[in-house]
Length: 232
Image 1 (tube, helix red, strand yellow):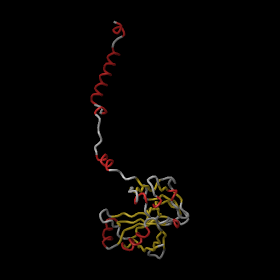
Image 2 (cartoon, helix red, strand yellow; image 1 turned 90 degrees about the vertical axis):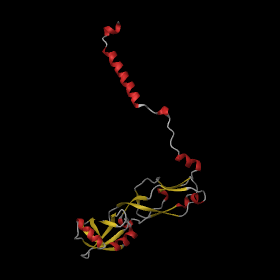
Image 3 (cartoon, helix red, strand yellow; image 1 turned 60 degrees about the vertical axis):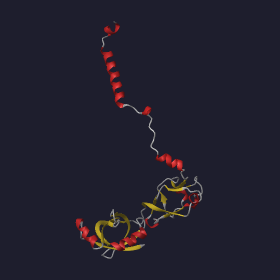
Image 4 (cartoon, helix red, strand yellow; image 1 turned 180 degrees about the vertical axis):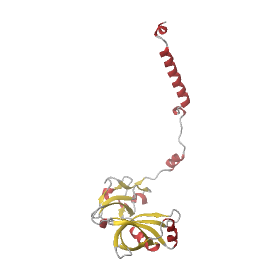
């Protein structure tokens, strides 16, 4: 488990910009056994740890008073242009209580259906929803795509060996990855052609509404005629 030092944050609200200019990231610590408190963390130290742990591995957070909290990097707000972290949520976990998480999938190997048949690799899902105790949370789960030899082959959730103590939160028949046959030039050209529209299938709304009004009007006139007049 990696260590990361934080200290109490004094610059709140709009003052957080000055904090970032000094090379720190505003953050908040909350969760099991912790009153929510604003903290700050050194930018370079945080990014080094975050690169290795992501949001699914435990971190030992060292506080100024000498205490430690076992946390997950629960959420990271990032700058839309530069990608730099703007704010971090540290979530203190209870080690004897299961957590739900979406674990990143890492695709390894080479699919023969791609290499030899020219197929297109289609990754249906990129994360696997699981449930586990904090100490059993995997950082990532590896998917070996070398089993994809034909266009009929698929890799589903039940084909992936799970680490000890990990339970699924998704149907085992969920497809993870497959290979589609390459499209011919004719098929690609057909996709680029605009769809043909038949004039016979177009409803002329104004005409139909007019016909409906006419029919209703004639029906009303017929009902308004007294019975005596109808007989004559």
